[in-house]
Amino acid sequence: MRSYDIFALKHTRLLYMLRVSFVFGVILLITRAFTIPYGYWALITAVTILGAIPFVGGVLSKAKQRVTGTVIGALMGLALFLIPPQYHWTHHIAFFALLVAAMYCTQEKYAYASLMAAITIVIVAGGGPADVAAAGWRIFNVLWAAILTILASLFIFPAKATERFIYLLEQYLVECSHYYAKHIKHAKQGKFPPSHAEKLNTIIETQQSLLPHMMVESGVNKSVLNDILLIEKRLFAELEALLSTQWESQQGQDEIMNLEGLTKAQSQLSDNFQVLAQQVSEKRVTEVECIDIHLLNLSKEQLCQSANDISDISYYGYLWLNREMARQFIQLSKASTALFKTP
Image 1 (cartoon, one colour):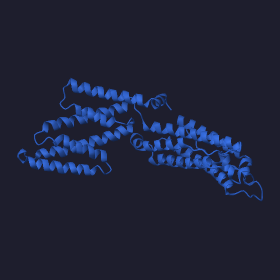
Image 2 (cartoon, rainbow, N blue to C red; image 1 turned 30 degrees about the horizontal axis):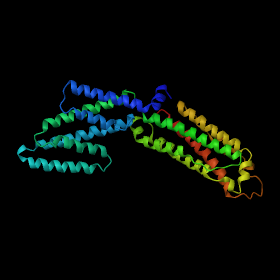
Image 3 (cartoon, rainbow, N blue to C red; image 1 turned 90 degrees about the vertical axis):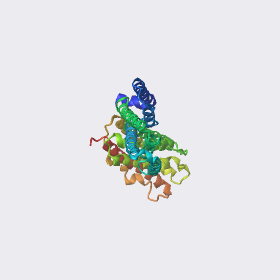
Image 4 (cartoon, rainbow, N blue to C red; image 1 turned 45 degrees about the vertical axis):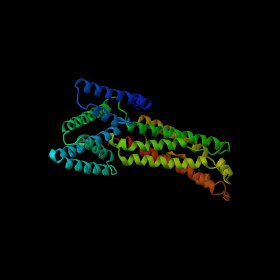
């Protein structure tokens, strides 16, 4: 990961505020220097586009909908001025109908664009048939402020959701290694204190929220992102089951502790999580194959302690959870490779 990307991830809020300050400062300078009528609409536009969205993809998506909604709302509002002034009641009735129609569309897919259209209709035609000059200035201020905001988001300390997603994937792998290594240490001591992998769930939820922004700012295949999230969820479920179960109360405890080669294979998988995390950070991932994971290559003799094994199903469940984690790890390495593959 580049030095700037690391810096941007650590100081997201600082860079966001610098970007906001630049946009607001330029808008205020232009509106005051040229005495632009209704200049405050330019500032309102910047606030609504930049508000709570630090990522380039989010800004582009929101700006696109705002501009689209503004243009549509402006055209609808200006159309009302084609009605002769003497029919002012017709103007007000048509204005009311268009506003209700726009609000109806806010419950559909492009809710924000519809909302902007409704607001623009109010801005353009809400003052009545004689307010056409003000309408024109308001539309102009919205459009140039939206363009300025987009350019600032692209070139003034840009923050990309894609880089945040990759950083979180790296952190997810590090946390997996941490939780798994802790479990291995307790298992060696014959202790299985119940615990939970809360951090993993938090990371997954944050990554999920980044998807809409990533779709706008990068060419990454959506199916690859969904695959990574699905694998992470499976790994989380399996690791959570491994950590939260009180294995010492099961009949298979001795077999679990004494299984030849299991602890070594577990430790290798824990180390592999760290290795993959480093590769993700460097954006150079090497696919892992089944033959490379010891947990998936334990011999039949190693999996059976005796011919008359009387351990309960928990013994085999423990083995299955570990082996399934190894399989999901392999799938995650392949999905991560596809994430950095040039289209």
